[in-house]
Image 1 (tube, helix red, strand yellow):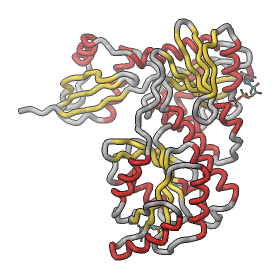
Image 2 (tube, protein in one colour):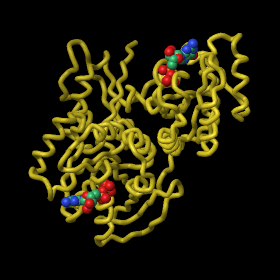
Image 3 (cartoon, protein in one colour):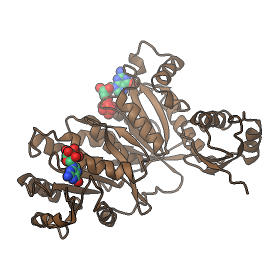
Image 4 (cartoon, protein in one colour):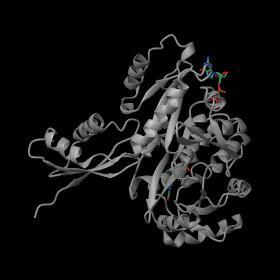
Length: 427
Ligand code: GDP
Ligand code: GDP
């Protein structure tokens, strides 16, 4: 499970202020995404060398709608099931409210570790106001002021105590962990069935240990695969809107545990916004990505390069990501798809040849007047990561140029290329 922390609480207690403080100001923003009704619902934070994701449920609860309204409660409960911990935020100025107790009860029912934080304690003399929140049943209540930042350090310290260790569930060696993502009805289950129906040895099939996910392990062309079926989960949890919120949350959890994501879309929509966001998330997390346009048997336009061009136009950041077409129902090009998945995986594992890299550096165009690129070195794989040492800061444009050159020479198709820069020090 990814380290997701969900902030819950009544409207106006200061959830989004706290969210911004956690992911925005003093802490490094790694990435953030536009959310449902607010600009951001999801962002990364780090504290004491550990990283976790913060989710603001604020946008799910509007001020004129009671949190206890059943519909919203059900939605937030689903969100919480994807999370590792929650912060129940309350308002120390207006005091304990019956809805705070309702939310606490819900958290106990879901069984998630949670902390109680009492916001708007702007001055030390008001700290006593936090005491009445002990009735919510926790050993500690944490007074803080999200606006001024006081008490936030203590909250972070406590959070790290309840979060599970960041260690990801590493799969067995040499097993390619594939995750199929896509909107409802694009054909995920059909594809999975087609993959498994054909002559492939299913090695193992068991419901995942966590929340009934089905993981299937099989062998194809000497490569062991394990596929996690996210479609199965969706069918169990028939949640209504806001779909985007859940799909993002769920995606965060799964993406951390896979090597390659196969994002399935269909020929009628190509790349809707929600898929763009998921694709961005996959790449930010450094995972391999393959986009597959399904139901090509129904499409008027079937030319793959034409479809690719349209998608790249709509989502330029997908340059370097392979785009395939297929019909999961008819089985057309499904083998081809798996071969491509293997190739994306292998490209991500690659260590490029040092000598060739040095030659490329020698041939590159100089960054700009009086800026010299001194060295380019690969420092990691899966995702391919490089460090560029230069005499002065490199422009974003130049970094993009470097990325393109690396792709031209080394392929690395389907993988995000991470380039860090460092300024050389001369003595
Ligand atoms: P949300 O609806 O729970 O997300 O609440 P917001 O973050 O939008 O905050 C609601 C109001 O409380 C805003 O006017 C904030 O400026 C205010 N607020 C947030 N944190 C603090 C705080 O620590 N002290 C005070 N005095 N006001 C705060
Ligand atoms: P999921 O929700 O993403 O798992 O989608 P399903 O696999 O349940 O498929 C949704 C519908 O699309 C079903 O009626 C499938 O038969 C249909 N479908 C899936 N793949 C194809 C395809 O390649 N061509 C056509 N024509 N229909 C497809």
